Length: 84
Image (tube, rainbow, N blue to C red; front, side):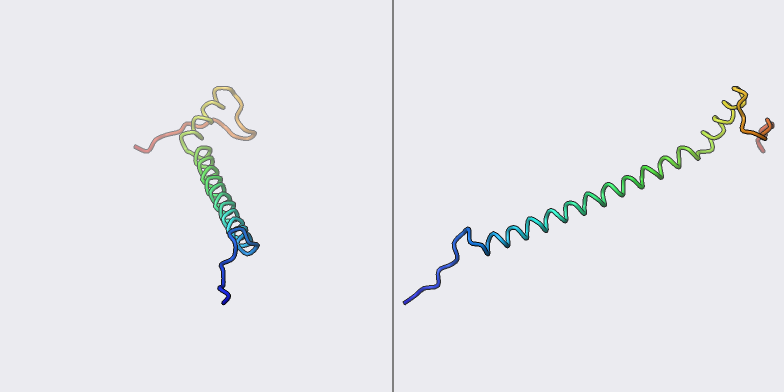
């Protein structure tokens, strides 16, 4: 009577399955890292845009340019009045 013995622990089939699982896990990790880096890159761009286009910063830069006498070509100094 022959009994069907299970394959040895390090058979080629077992190694192929393990290799496939490792490759699958590695590709998922790489995709996760790409999404993570991409998300924070977009957030960094949004933050930089907010900082550079902030009205307070724009007004401070204009006042600095007025004080230094280096306004862009064609721009004149005008009084900024608040409508309070």
